Length: 587
Image (spheres, rainbow, N blue to C red):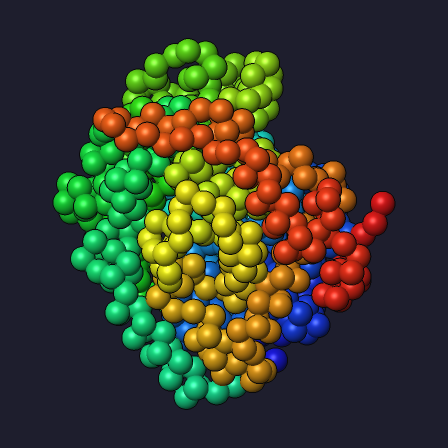
């Protein structure tokens, strides 16, 4: 197969066995790679608990990884979330995907539980399992140092070892498989790290064609102010959004009690670039380079991280935000869930936290001590339930909401609710048209037409995560350009509609597997705060609460567009239409 190595790795940690198998061509045809292939491989095993020996942990590249297609260096990690209980995937940057492909493999499937801590080493077709007892208890930088330079690595810190439900896998030091607790799945298998190096090349069907389509995409990127403008992602990183979301009075503040934080400019992308003399960095194969690193090595946090470590916790101290982000990278903690859980704790207990309190709580969570650290390590939903106040967890399906208040963007409200993996802005991203006005403007305070918009965006992003590519490039390019690119790479014929059909197949499979694990329409909802309380936005500007009747009508319309029944479960007709029968399990 062009665009694929045609070889993949299966690791059984219980048996300490390594086997090489042929990458399934039918999965590549129907699901592309990355997220899609990972979810299809989960299939019937979605019935298991996240810490079962039979639960797979899958690292999957896509057909564009290792080619010259822009932003093609990513990889998807797929398993079951310890936080939400949903089928879960994370799309990750860095260079792990590229190194794995160059080492000769499309994906890694890991099952079983090792008797003691181990690491995996992969280099140019060779795979080994090595004892790593001495790495237990070490955090990310220490573990990386012990494994040596060169290649790429995926590491868990102590939070993943100790079962924090929102522990991350950290790639190359600061690229995160961040959400949902995938790091805890890796920890449950007693797998401390993976090191991969590769020097091979990916075979491309039409090298001249991919070079041509790469230039088409690059022309669109260079013309985009959102990407390459003076205040765009390339110059300021994702924290460029701080000022925009602030101006729209929709920044989550003090556990979403308010929607305006007067000191947000302290950690805006522009101010942090100037203050820390930030330089560009980024993933393998990416021309955007949205990562920012300070002159003294400080990793500048992403938008979601600065907003939640800042406004959500009423914190205007930039140094503490940078340090909190560093701690999350070191321990392997999801910044969104960690900051949200701390904000939930602050509201429930009626405590005004200082910057020092914030840092102290992060350490206690990561170490999962027997006191408050253990309680908060369970996530905001479980913590709020234990305190008799479940309504104060700002989450959907147990996944804490990111840094866009849904009262300020109704498409985002619907997308949070309908997301297969829980409260997430990356399944669909209606912020692009509701706030950024790309590719067209839509009324952010209306549900009109949003059901179909969200459905199409969910399908598109499933494709993007399966190619695998970066969502930021789609501020400028479209699936039309990427259909040409993947056709040139693989020699197969794709167009926009055939790619969207693959995205729909991935989405419906995820949804069906979740429904058999008990998820239904009752989980497709927002915290009642957003329907009962307006935003407190400062000055004369107010954000009204969302009309619940309108929200429920929009959700009903979404179900009809999706082919769900009234309980939110995909109908047999759509499963048959998408040829999904062989990938399902039934009670």
